[in-house]
Image: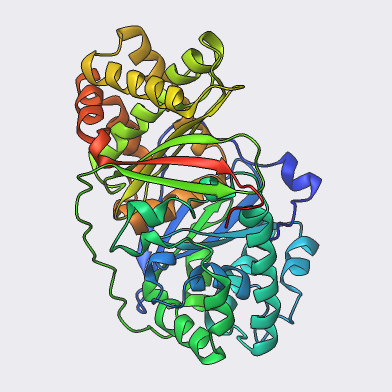
Length: 441
């Protein structure tokens, strides 16, 4: 999604908060919309965000890519915002805006100088109440999405690894997580205008959304504005959540993918992991940090610094509402065979499964996660996104304050146990990601 930058003045005032408790209030509108407000008057900046509980996993077979498509389509305009003017209005008022889509939800937000709070509330209510969904908008955004797919996946080195389009289809069999968020262009081309309108009506309702206001505002007047702008929006139909269980992976899945944009291959292991709400998912975050997160990780130090068999080590731990994935891998240096990369990765996994990490490494790990926590709450924009996510996907807004305690409570024994339970050879995809030659299909 296109970004519009904050003015220099607004950037200068962007809020930085300490690791203190994030205070918030919550209430529901009569139409079912949940509202969360976090007041922080230390800088004259406010974020208005709306998260909808619809993502790629909610799409029908043969119509993939709809959720992400709407991330673009709903910036086209409304009955009261002329087509193509959304970004201009935001920029003219010193703000920034963006949107993003995952398998589980879609999130839209604006960050304004606080004196434009009402404008942000009005714009988001317009997006929900009066969107213009017509053929010219669909055709325009179809081309935008196609170009995004070409630039980020089709023509980008390692795009199918980064965006998991060459991975999830192996790890998931029944669950719609097997499809990519961006979907297929064939599905979008085949879709009719009425199908887009039906998708909006099904998922874009106040009772399937959470509104967050974070930053510099006056609570009582803001609450009244929220009621004025969002209260009259009619409640939508009940949304039934995806409830599909995957069978456990019991045998190693071996696969090869080709990429014409690369010259250096990747050896990757991919594991299916539990729901983001499961405590073991938090432990796996720490496992990933130990093995593959950055230059201080075990695999980087051994494979890149010490043995010099790899150019880079990569890791993509993805937490999601129903299941997650953990991708680890490395780019071999020189003529190092992929089998050697696999052997060393397995050796490091085995060490984690058989030996407790040292107290020193454990404390370093805790410090890293403390720092991540502080950084995630370092701006009102980040806090707004976190509040919406914790409400919608975890069902507990106060995780914004309590989640760090979950990490603090993880023991060295937990790390060893979880490494043994999830990082098993017979529970993974072993992927060779290779340069594509001219004679290969």
